[in-house]
Image (cartoon, rainbow, N blue to C red; front, side, top):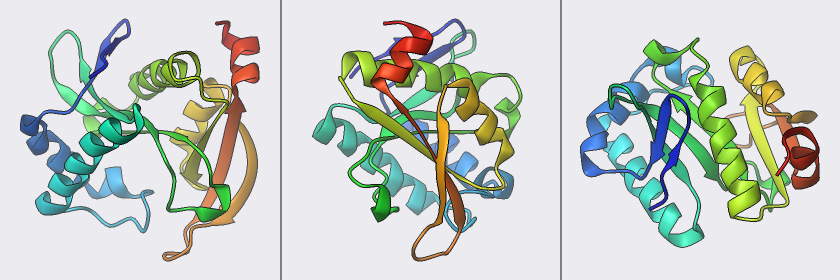
Length: 181
């Protein structure tokens, strides 16, 4: 499993003992407010999600990293790359995403973790394009996407639960022009 380090964070592979922190984050209504239909997830759903994140790494060679604060070792959420099959109109695609526990909001952790994950996707995995999808009202994620250099391409609605989302994107060429590499 690949580990990435930033100034303040470690992005690492998932462990079984991460379930408690993941389940607590997924049970927080404010954290889940803009995720799919806004429903919280119970411990069983979080355990299934954890196993899916592990399997995605094995299948694709990229995925969602567990994100922890280097100084404390505290798991604060996840960030990384996934396939957004919940939105068929953007496929084929690779999406960058993140989810942090509420106590970690406002410190720049999402931007820091996503920056490392995006660099990994473009420079280590050779991806040509990365998208990000957010609920149109999620202004915090919009700010992170802007800092990452993603441009808003279009708005649409997610099939199944009819949530309005904005699709943002960046190409490897745009990434290199902005950040080097």
